[in-house]
Image (tube, rainbow, N blue to C red; front, side):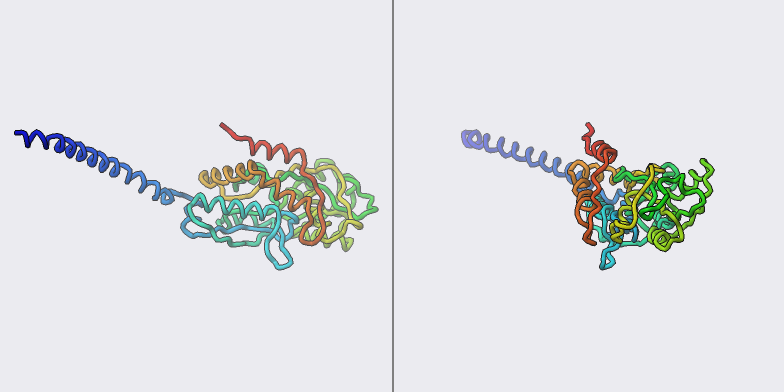
Length: 315
């Protein structure tokens, strides 16, 4: 009896240890499905995010003539403000899907950029593309990354000071742009008889202007400044007139893909909060371009306001 009494506390400790072990086993079994669900989370991806995870690559559409947003370096590589931001977005999407994404590049024009996104040939379009209601019926857009507007490029000494001076003159516009639509609408609304020459890209329009075949080139003011700086034409050409349109630029991607839209929105907001968008702006608009010239264009109050709204931390 004394012997049994002496071992009774040990047996109680053993039983208690057994109950603790059993409880730990239950907790471990309960935690295992949770861990498995976390590990399996990427399997629940849909749409473009699933495509990116499965392929391990992202296709970025880019322009060759949208200085300083999206153009080609001397080595033929895509460079520019929007290119930089698209690369950062690709990194963020890679984090979202759980793998580093290889970058594939697809050259597009103003005419082919929207079809490339709609057809799934590209995942993001990195150029100087205006987000408007008409285009939003076909594609989706990131938050605004730049704000521009249509103006005119003319030779110094030209009598053309505004769009009203284009009467009985020729103006070049790039096919598939909001600038073409703005010029045609102004011509119709104000009864200005002008000849509109449609070109495949901005460089072709500039060539017509330099050869004297047209008297003005109409496109977004920042792109006109970019063309002038890129070709070192500051002494011979100038940007004139009031804004003929309002053009908020954004990165374009496929419509009806809410998971992708949420991921891009989150990534752009993070870039704004971190000051990265402002740093990239300074790099391409205030510092020297690879060509050795600088646009010297401070950030507009409108863009400052737009980026400020993006960086505001919502509760």
